[in-house]
Amino acid sequence: MPSPSDRSRVAYVVKVYPRFSETFVVTEILAREAAGEDLAIYALRPTTDARFHPQIAAVQAPVTHLPRAHRLVGEWEVFGRAQAELPGFGPALGELMPLLVRMDPSDVAQAVDLAVRLRRDGITHVHAHFASLAARTAMVASALTGIPYTVTTHAKDLFHEDVDQVLLRAVLGRAANVIAISDYNRRFLLGIDPALEPTVRLVRNGLDLTRFPFREPGAPRTPLRVLGVGRLVEKKGFTHLVDAAAELVATGTPVAVRIVGDGELGDRLAAQIADRGLAGTVSLVGPRSQAELVEELAWADVLAAPCVVGADGNADGLPTVILEAMASGLPVVATDVTGIPEAVHPAGVTETGEPVEQTGILLRAEEEWLTDRLAAALREVADPTWPRAEVARAARAAVERDFDTVRQSRLLAELEGAADVTGTVDVLAEVTR
Figure 1 (tube, rainbow, N blue to C red):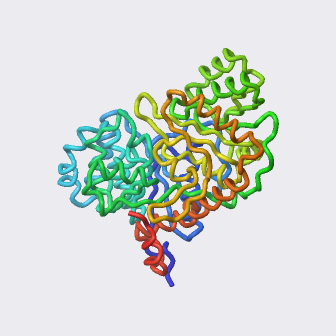
Figure 2 (tube, one colour; figure 1 turned 120 degrees about the horizontal axis):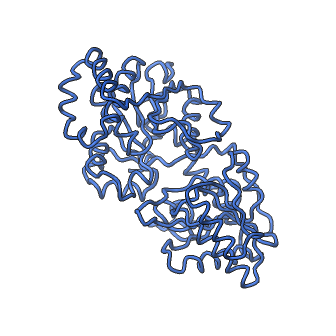
Figure 3 (cartoon, one colour; figure 1 turned 60 degrees about the vertical axis):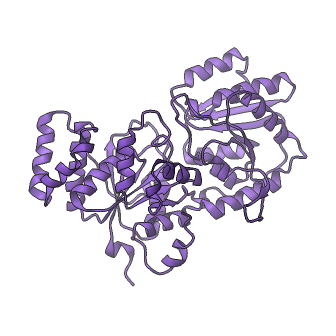
């Protein structure tokens, strides 16, 4: 029986590789390589990260960092090579011109360069993460080579005031399949263009469950240990976590908060902590590797993810750390931003009457009174009578069912036509449209 690599070679196109905050990309690549797929990675910008997860070293795919021409002579040189190597290059480029004029010329030259390299490297399918620069580049390269592409949409590439709606519609409309990481995203995409219905598929970001073993939660400690993880940016809502800590302290609930990550709001959060007199209560501990994050999860009694919608429209899709906490047996308090309610939710019933178990505490994301709601939820988790063991077990089961990277990566591969046909029908039948 032939392996997938006998028939296909998939290119991953990403803006930056490696990127410390995009562990889901590396997890997905490793899962697909473990399944026997032949992958190659093409990055459009050099990384500026100072730290890297050790899992990067396990990736076997060759990585090509595409040079970016900053002078016209460099761009003409790229176009000259494409004219010589890509059949029908001129007419194909002309057809794209209404879209190309909306792009930076150096980005267009990178896309043309990518097209040449894809053809030389024997690539049969292109997959891009984020419907912004990476997907635009894949779209142009696909049009010049005839190699189909898919795109996984996330958050900032959809929910931001700077999104070029014309280019976004083109990227989505030309893709062989558009991957939504949540049902919320799927509905959003169909709201952009209902004609996308045949190509929009739900494939959730996956988690390597072997790296996050479940531990039965013990009784909450005193002070209550609260963990926040993410980039220090507006949409993570950490300013509300700091204020909630102040409210808990003021009302006699001992609490210790650790916030993992770095970002543009670091100085502002540090000043907020000092102004509230929380220097011994709230700590900004900086970024952590995956192994270090496992230790942070073990330290905590609860993960707080008070995500909000930023003033620029930016919002999270479903932060990976929420899934990591749920898999590990750590209770989660989160807000109902975009796809988060599909993982963290109260008990209830489905539309067909099936019971749904509580997997965490879900708060409204509106910023008015969010601090009060968050403080109240943390007090609830600190109560020894709160059913933390039952909630933790239900959360782990939900992650195993919906977010296992082995299963999600297999779905993605099959959508790209790269997987072995054995079992394809059964699995694809489970893909939710």
